[in-house]
Image 1 (cartoon, rainbow, N blue to C red):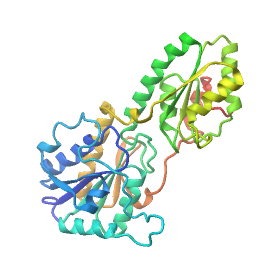
Image 2: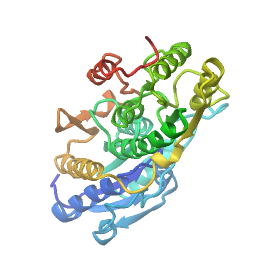
Image 3: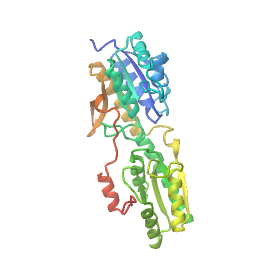
Image 4: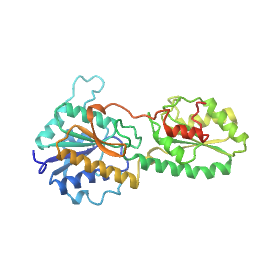
Length: 343
C-alpha cells in the first residue's frame, strides 16, 4: 500500500499525564502534513472505539496543544478484553473491530501505559493494525528506557521536596513525602536524589521500619536537625493506611521525633509538560507515524540507548519495568549516605 492516503485513529488511555497532547500533535501533524493521512481521534480511550465516539483531527485541531496538560481526546481505564466477575463473554472486542472496519482504518495509535499496551497487543492478535506509544509518570513500561510524563512528575516531586527542606529545618522535624509508584520506585528514586532526600523507600527494596527510625535518630544525634524521607506509595505497609502515614506514625512512636507527612497525589499528573517530555512525546508521535507509513504495525515505539526503535507489542504487554536494586544510581546514592531502609 502507498504511504499516502492512509486512515489512522488515535486514542489516549489509562491515567492522564503531561505530554499526551504533545504526542497527539506529533502523530497528527506528521500524518497530515508529511504523509497526507486522514486522522481520527477516539474519545475516552478504548471506550471511543467501542462506542463509535470519534471526530476528525485536522491540522488546526492538533496545533497549539504541545504546552497543554491532560489530553484533548479524553481518557478512561476501559479494558475491553477483561471479563467482569460472572461474565463469560463480552462484545467489546467485536465492537472495536466493527468501528475499525466501518472507518476503514489502516491503524490505531494507542497512547498509554502498561494496561494500554496489553490491550493494544490483544487487538494486534485479533488482526487489527496497532502502534503503541508508551506514557506514564511511573516510567514502568517494559521495553523502553523512558516514558514521557516521567520527567514532569519528577520535576513536580523535586520542587515539593525542595520546599520541605526549609520547613523541616525550621521545626527540626522528619518530613515524609509520598510520591506515586504502586509497583515501581522510579519517581521516588529520581526525585529523592534530585531533592537531597536522606531516606528513600521504594517497592523494589525491602526495608525495615526499625532501620528507618534508627537512621533518623543517628542523624539527630550527629547534630543534623531534620530528615527528609521520600516514599513511593507502593511500599509494603498495612493496606488501610497510606505509606506516608505509616512511616510518620512509626517515627514518632519509636524515636519521639516530630514527623509530618505530605502526599502529592494527583498533583504529579497535572499541569504543563516539561520541555523534555514535550520533546520525547513529539519524537514518539512522529516516529509512530513513520512506522505506520512503512507498514511496520503491531509495534510500540521506544527509546533505547537514546535511539528511537520499535519493539513488538507482544513482548511488552503485561510486563513492568522495575528499578533494579543494583541500579547504578542506587549505588551512588548509598555512597552519598542515602538510606534505603535495608541496612
